[in-house]
Image (cartoon, rainbow, N blue to C red; front, side, top):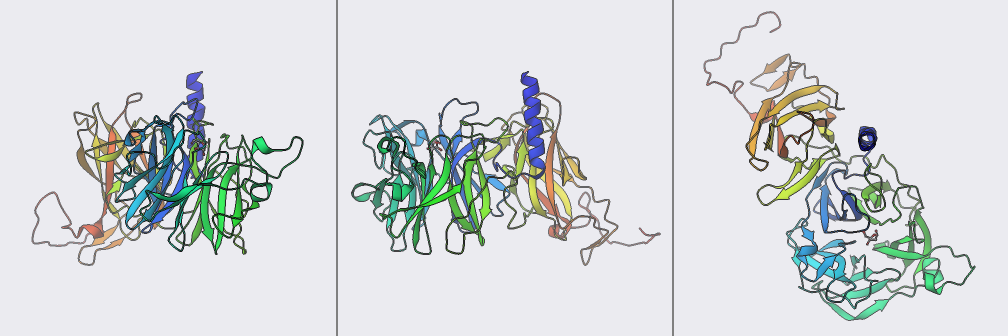
Length: 499
Ligand code: FUB
């Protein structure tokens, strides 16, 4: 029975991988996405649902980044419950923002000080950390369980606003230092006009309401209008929003954005960001084969605002979004960068940072829209480690069974963290001529861009190896002697037939 379920799950993932980009992280269950664009890169900060969990027993937060919206690099978990001496449970929704070159990550977690949920803040000099608790205590707590899901925004006048809450919206005006606040805790009036219905406990029996705020607020501003997006409706949740002329209101209910859909998750949680001229809506579903209500996964859709700045209806898709840039393989690429993967996990250590682990026979990593341009990949190099017998990495184009450019043999290296860098010459049999002085290649039979599948092979059953990074080198790039295995001099060309 278990075997059958695993086989069905594997088939589902295989079918998804052919076209799908959603969920865009397959290695772990991730939730509560919070996008942030910085220096030309899209970052997404997420929660992490434990595999097989029966509640939101969440221990850490994670970060992913992309420059093309389809190939995502896993930056691991630079923040966890242990980062906060006062927190002991429930690493729930969060959001990060940059100010004056520092990155402030607002989180909520259960506090062992007050026994309720508390809002905390961590700070770092880079978007991927290392982050540390900025205060050594919660930024706000009072023993209530309402204090979850912080969202943060810096207004045009420099005032930073922090909002959060379930089942009502609380707010604080942050000081310029982002780690202290001015005045008292505020509460938005939870009226029918503002949110489509009052809080559950204030509802009139038998009366029908348009909607109701639940949790997961996301505060943003467009063309001078403040927009507060949130999970609505109860369980299961959909996403709605309200608008206002100022963060303090008056807020006006503006309708649903992502209606209730069969996503295999009874919660939803959103964030929006513009990137490279496109607008993106991030949310979560339970759509990994091993997923569900407590095993959620982040997803993204592209959308266009209506002419008046309002949101269109956005539906969840498996296809996800299109690339907005090509992917350059002629550089060191962290192996944990992927458009899709099957079977593998990621881990991290102090020596190499994040790496791909749990590789078994038949697993793969897909990179999308890889730009070979007019270069030819001459070599493939990978940094790998294996405490057993190793295996192989096959480099295929466009599908796991597509044209194979070469196979890198990974030996046992004597330990799962004993790294070796290994290079293989790729198959360039389609090249009919290389003119060394001009570096011109004839017969090059490679598309300008293709999807690349790194397919892992080896003995069936055991873990094969760990994978840290890879790199392709093109002929042009190498500015090379034509032959690298021996010193050669005094070249004397001779043409016989077409060779
Ligand atoms: O991830 C735990 C909780 O589930 C979040 O704080 C809520 O927004 C809901 O997504």
